[in-house]
Image (cartoon, rainbow, N blue to C red; front, side, top):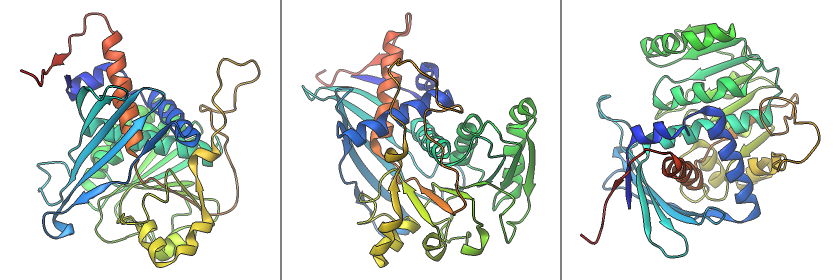
Length: 344
């Protein structure tokens, strides 16, 4: 069994945003075809849920011949010294059950979350969408920004807001070169404006315990991308015209996300829900004909309604990225991977 560190995962090349997005889209198609699936997550809280919890998320990828487990902690209040989530990913051979690899999971989790958002934005906005508001300035926010820049080729303005303005300013400086290369203007908001109609795409990527986004923040024609837990009030979720998810049924029983809290209180919200996998164009297999418009292989849908994308976060995505990292490292000449023999 291989033990694969974060530096090895970075060296594999899967951190390239467009490569990660294409892999996520392929995995969504496999989910739609029934060849890849995840089981219901199991949550364990050693005390009050607000003090932290641990999650077990098993899945398999039939096309890749692997099964696996994402094991992660969600423990807040570490004073910035430790990340909120600290996952690891285990891969097994699907036929024999043999453990193949254990991978550091935090980088993969960040890549997965950003790539899923990029796939959703490519499917749900027009290529000319020119403005983005990112709420948050931490680990996930950084991955969101890195993934969304290539997914929005018409981007002209990036707005940043954080409960800690200094961190938003630091994020702005970190991406200053990428903004300048594209001619993108950037602005840090010291306070969240009462209306957000200056942004075509809004991303909620904070660890907020209480919602800060309300129904009056949103305007027709906007796409809101929700990757956190409680960034948005349930009444605001209810006000969207359409809700797109990477998964819906898996989150309803126990997820703390705003959407699923609403679904338990109002099951009728399911009538507004569409799965992202159903909005993707079929994957091209070297067939002749024109390429789809824009940077991705998805079908963009422009409209005047308010649309929300909710990222539940599926373990099949983590497994797909982990397996692709392993495959690339094994194929690279001169790369030595650390082995662990459980029989020793």
